[in-house]
Amino acid sequence: MKSSSATAFILSFALMLTLGCASTHQTRKAADPSASRIDPMADVASDNVQPIDEHESTPSAIRLVTHQELSIAPEPGDSFEESAVATDEVEIVANANNSMTLAAFEELAMHNNPAICQAAAAARQAAGVHAQVGLKPNPSVGYFGDEFGNDSTSGLQGAYMTQAIVRGKKLAWNRTVLGHDVDTYRWLTEAQRYRVQTDVRVKFYEALGAQKRLELARQFRGVAEAGVDVSKELLRVREGARPDVLQSEVQLSEVDLMIQQARFEFDAAWNELAAIVGMPTLAPTVLVGDLSLPKTDRDIEGVYAQMLAESPVLSAACAQVRRARANLQRQRVQAIPNVNAQLGAGYDDGTGDEFANVQISMPIPVHNKNQGNIQAAYAQYSAATQNVRRLKLQMRRNLAQSMRAYEIAKATVQQYEESILPRVSESLDLVQNAHALGEFEFLRVLTARRAFFDANFKYVTAQAELAQANSAIDGLLLTGGLDQSITYSGGDDLRGAALSGQ
Image 1 (cartoon, rainbow, N blue to C red):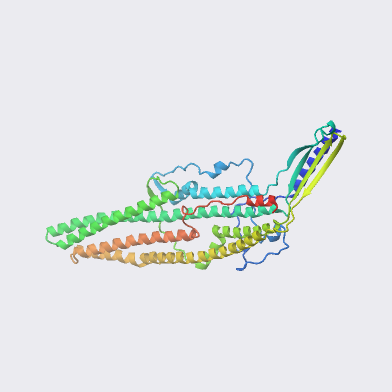
Image 2 (cartoon, rainbow, N blue to C red):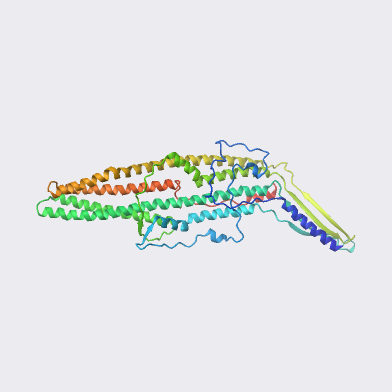
């Protein structure tokens, strides 16, 4: 008889495990967010928030677009510690001239910038929460005994199992909601890469411009120093005047000042560049690069369309719209009560009979129908759609400002190349030749030299500004990699709500 009791209990155990499978899981496959881009506004077709059909009760019913499949559950062999912590700094590989290129700085930044590592850790944290919120509740087992000593017997003894059965596909909806969080943080990680890369390019061209101005100033210093010697010699042989000497000395002092300023500008740009790549103690070295970039004619509408299609920040905002919409449906199914089932089997020692008992309970949603959370979720969905509109307008405004800077710098560079530089060069040649023939005073030579130097100095500055403006536009106007801190603040609250049943 006792053997039959054990058999009955084992069958009961298997039955309860089968009942526990009533809540299904959704899985999603891996894909790189950058592999195929979706229309950021595909699920925000109207500026107004559209009502959701009350009768839609399955995850597929409210999916507005085909969502990119991606892996959110960690693989069994994943090491969270290794992925969440930045690796050792990449060693600098310098060439024979101990110089560095833009590509070298970009590679260093991708490996060492903590903002990228932090954002990647936040995405991985979201993936862990996503894996947790869809897990079924564990069954409970226990022992019961009653009527001990009744008629000198051991009374009633047995075992039981309880299992909470989550209804309304709450756990599946949990994973749908948190899956959009994973999407969001992967896009935000991509945005951090854009920010860091743009910062590196902008600061590299700023430092390169300062380096070239420093080279120009040092070259001109030799000319200015020779001019001082010439003016003094002319004064000595009574072919010059004291004002010529003073003017040449002033010019030399001004060049020395420009050398100092260019040095300070280079040091500041280098220090910022080293901080951005995550290696603040990186020693200054020669930069190798070209400021003569192609002067592309950019159409603001074309650039704006490209930004809408490729901006990871906008993609992250659209993922939050989809999350808010899924969460709205998740809150609607919260009121569907869960079922608590208990199955037990035992033996009555007094009568020698076996027995079994079954208990099923569920709350009745009379007072609490989750109406407050539904209202809050709808407001969250409305706010998310408006945030997408806000970002689009912000991108348009920022693009207008960047395009203005780009066009001004491009026009300045073209004017110097086509008009100013050829003229100051010709003027300097004519004045120097005339002075050699005794037609002009030496003061005219000093003036022509200063004009030639100033024009070349400003030309390099304009080239650097054009390269910086071009880099900002190519980087989708995403800058400030060290200013943006990406952290994940979510949790598994939805799972707790799903298991509570109220």
